[in-house]
Length: 186
Image (cartoon, rainbow, N blue to C red; front, side):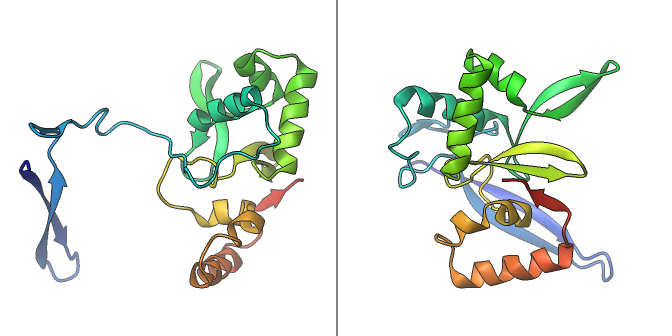
């Protein structure tokens, strides 16, 4: 078995000036027995073996929906793309026109697949400050390892079936503190 690297983090209390060090052992980027950690420190998308897309979706439809995972905005599961306005790079919501381009289909086909995905709880349409986004259910794919309160608010119907009671209660408290800033459209 190969050696582990040691990661040292210094934590400084701003009030008292106390300095603590936290040491953790992490996998070496290269281990002679196990090989190289592929794409270390890169963005990634998580999918879960225990949560496949519903059987009602054809392989082609599953492939199209899986392509969207790479367009998830990590903090809230919104589907976005990099665009520009007045020469300035910005993040924009993924709409039907962009889906047509990505999937290489006509408007009707894109619209039908979005409708079907919404009916099965894979996608949800939400509005934030008057801007409409499609959000991707973290049960079927996510960019992070945490579910934020925003994501919980969007997909609470599906997530309540999977999360422990204590987590649901914490999310409910946090959602009440935030107030209604997001509107689920469908």
